[in-house]
Each structure stands twice: as structure tokens, then as C-alpha cells.
Length: 175
Image 1 (cartoon, rainbow, N blue to C red):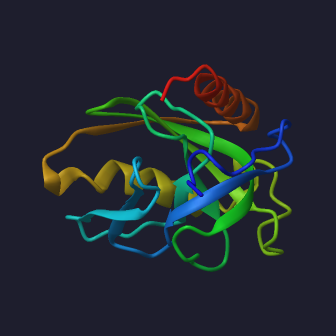
Image 2: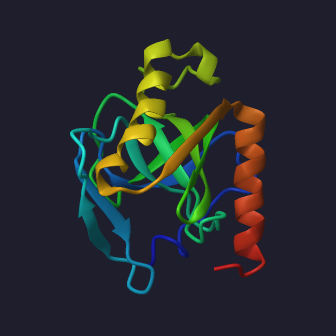
């Protein structure tokens, strides 16, 4: 089984999507699923004194502007082991630009975690949560000498549209 291609994604993306977690919340390690094998590969140890502020992974059967599956940050109480599938509901997103071009980050909550399952929009979150996400993506590549630009936060409707475009691109074979 390959985590990018062989996990079913429901037709309606609004209630939840399966998020394959690559990096647990609190980690300094940048893991990525190796496209040819589907195994987890260590990409790098973060150069900066920061850690992932949420469980980080991707939505299977999607193709984003950067050539990879669409990224997703899943807010929940606990860090999750890599390659765990988490049911996540999108509540917004961040548009980033880096050396590979556009790079959306969907912000979601775990629907199976009672501490966050009730959130339906980023505006309902404690304000500091979104500031941490924004700051992480502004800082995490700085000491590598790489450029990344963080745009404005967008809402749930735009997040669902970004997810649908990424799913449509995958279905068209843009891998």
C-alpha cells in the first residue's frame, strides 16, 4: 500500500479528509513520504530552534502546486506517530511561496479529538495558535538560507476549494 495513492478520500471533502501524518507535533525532524517507495524518509533536521506546532502531513490523492500532495496541519492535543491516518476537517489555510512556488498549508482539526473537534473556523481558535503557525512557517527555513513567504490566512471555503483543485489535479494525472 502506498500512502499517497492507495488511501480512499471521500467525495465530499467538507466533513473530513484522511490526513497522513508525516511529522508529529513538537518534532524537529522533517520527514517526507518517499514517492517511489511510499516509505518514510528523513529529509532533514530543522536548522532553526523551532519545532512543528501541529501534526503535519498530506492529503492522499491530491496534487498541489509544488508537485507534492497537498500539505495539511492537524490541530489536536497529542503528537501522532508518522504514517498514522487521522480524520481531519479543514477550517482554513495558509498560502505560502517558497523556492518551489506556491505551497498551500490546509489548517484542520482532528474530528476524533474532543478538545478540538468543535472548531469549525480558524477565527474560533485561540489567537495565539494561528500566530504560532504563521511564525513557524516564517522562521523554519531562515537558517538554511532558503526563502519562504507566508501570505494571509484564508477561511474554510477557500481551503475546501484548494483541496478540490488539488484532488482534481491528481485525478487528471498531474503527478
